[in-house]
Length: 242
Ligand SMILES: [Zn+2]
Image (cartoon, rainbow, N blue to C red; front, side, top):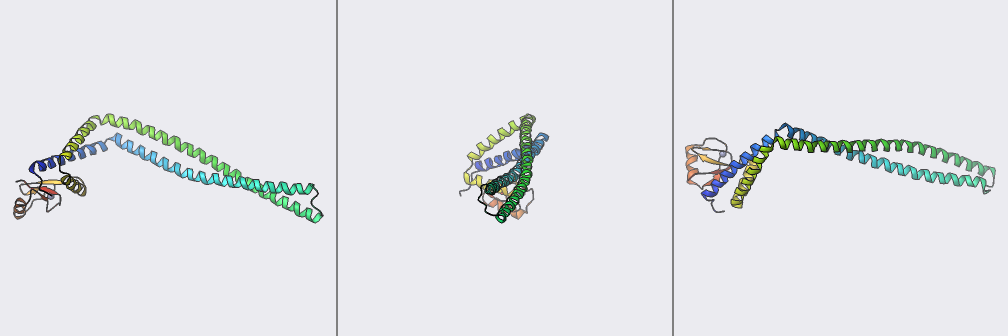
């Protein structure tokens, strides 16, 4: 990489200053009470969605149990009807067989009753789950409506801050465009690592980013080196004046 020109380094420091102001504004915006209410409301809406998803899963399970019971009842009823018709169509030859058929009808009837009881419980459960699901959908919609309102209130409260932020962001984009891509990438990586400030300037015997003073020998070495280097203390990019 060729050494950046002093104009590019000035531009980089301006970009850093703009980024600093953008961060400060974003903090101010995040601290607005309307913003915090909005975030809380969005969190509530998200939680309601999650609960709704859980209910849908339970409902799916209950509905499938319902279908299974209905199918079983159908099969059992057919079996009982078939046995009953045998009682009257003369196909049962003797009293012993007749008794067996009657016992079979009785057992099957009992099983149908048991299945129907279970089905009733499942139907009740399905109904309850459907009510809960509908309530969660309604609550979620209400929370989202409230969030949209809060967004409006927040935007009104933040109008001038947002306008300033928009200008700064446009400024930032303009400056970033003028910087060599490699320099911009190095700066952004350093800023990300340091959680904000990515470049400092050597002024007197200190780096403006970490503000730690350096020994005369360190300063001498930096002054003799390239115009852009790394701060020996904070490892951010460091612009060394000529
Ligand atoms: Zn430093």
